[in-house]
Image (cartoon, rainbow, N blue to C red; front, top):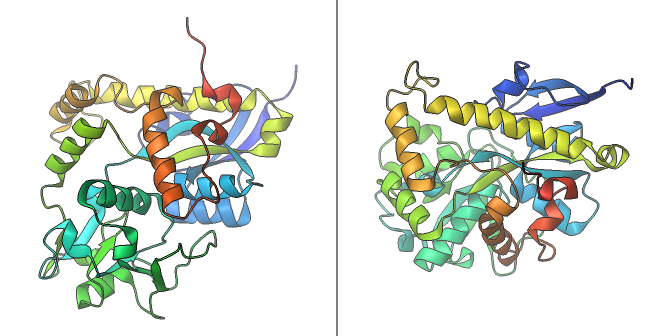
Length: 330
């Protein structure tokens, strides 16, 4: 009998990954070592040093590498992070009251390539007519100075893109009024501690995001899982085994949300929130798979190319191991 393959797996600590961490869901044919990391550390180590056999990856950074060729990873359609991003736009409320007010303004973003910013720039253009070229962009650390793009790229044509001054953070610059708005996956500290004149661009973001979903049927994908391409080539069965395990772990997490006996998450509104999500998005509201997410992936890839991040326009099928593009049915 052959030995199980050892795998180092870097992933965030979520309800949909914990059944993997605690051993409830094994990965067939593998002996995994899990590293629970923050997204910033994980993505830096995955793309800069290529340290892990399997890693959660930024969708945007992965598409950059895939479009250029020579990407060390091949994706599987386990979308471990998905989030509506209207709530990720923070602004000086004394200057900005609506999306159109962003034109000509200084807008901070941790990295121009972050997936959240790709989605936000896309929705600003599609829904409000605000182009990336209409804004002036500043990149840098949200809470720590000196953050740089994890994958180097040239500023897209017509886009004014500068780094934050040395020693400055985006949160501090927003609070001091040196930038007018900020797009970030994490809430900046100036917002969380209630600094004056700092708020979300969409104060009623829940209603806006629900209306967005009803209109577009898009639940934005942020992260996927990648496997070292050379490892997958040596073991052609591996992508399907990893995908199967991640999908099973997600199914356990989603199922637990609907059990009112004991709440699986410390959120008083969990039961009705889960029921509302099902009413809006269907029973399987957190879908994995290529076919199931074809429309969402197509929109993201269009945004990515139009924003000058992709070296070429690529298709969703190019992102994923062929064995995971479609699945067996009973």
